[in-house]
Amino acid sequence: MVEKINQLMAEVKAFDSKNPAEIEEFRIKVLGKKGELNRLMEEFKAVPAEQKREMGQKINQLKNLAQERIATLKAEAEAGAADAASLIGDMTRPGSAEQLGSRHPISLVRNQICDIFSRLGYTIADGPEIEDDWHVFSSLNFPMEHPARDMQDTFFIEKNSDEPNQKDVLLRTHTSSIQVRTMEHQRPPIRVVCPGRVFRNEAISYRAHCIFHQVEGLYIDKGVSFADLKQSILYFAKEMFGENATIRMRPSYFPFTEPSAEVDVSCNLCGGKGCNVCKGTGWLEIMGCGMVDPNVLKASGIDPEEYSGFAFGMGVERIAMLKYGVKDLRLYFENDVRFLRQFDSAL
Ligand code: DAH
Image (cartoon, rainbow, N blue to C red; front, side, top):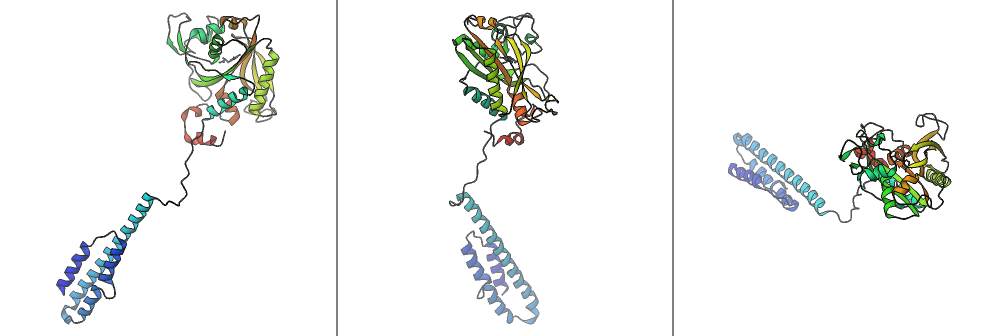
């Protein structure tokens, strides 16, 4: 009988299967009503009393071993089946939702600006980020001693001497360079918006960055007046900030426009009453603009006696900041998905 028990133990230990039907068959063979274990129990009755204790223990060991082994194999078989199912896939199960990316708020606002002006008949113009002094400064009527030409503001790639030189190679500091390039290649009427990245040698803080985005606008034709400029900007402000938006213009100075103005839009947060965003004034500065200086037209071969025009330029980060209430400009550059996902539903 001991031999029989040992043999069964070895059999149980050696048994291995991933097939649930096979495992069940083995269970019935060993532990079933008419199985090996019960047969041993029958034989056990005839065991002499002095051997009963030892034999009983052995049979119990066998029973425990068999139960454990079968439970383990069953669990493994089930896990295996689940794995296989997930590998093959349940063909009737609905597909898992893909997480869509979202557009960057700067792209959203840039596209919106371009869309608004395209409804007024503007097309998009592009230009290089690596520019020369002529297109960024000289052709735009910047005096030689203008501080923007300074190393402090401009990233130079190739500087020919200490003095400004029209051949100096630099990163453009504004998108106004694209209006010059457009005038070089197009004859009036010209109506373009020029979106792009610009670079300035500034210390990075919550309100300044060395890389940012601008959209420049240019309209040249016969008889273009300041009234046309004002009306176009008002239309833009209402489209961008809502029907109730109003604008005001403050006299200003830019080398490439005369007269020049800075444009404020009524604060859309407090409705003009004054709050901490508009610093109590009820107005938010959104862009610079003006009538294109005759010198600029001349520099690009357009006759200022025949044509006039206006130009404007705005910072995309600034508009996005006002539209979405973002207080720290650096957030636009960090690409933190928790920030970016907030714009998921924006167009
Ligand atoms: N280029 C100017 C800047 O970077 C913005 C600007 C002001 C553009 C007035 C214009 C303009 O076209 O007329 O600050």
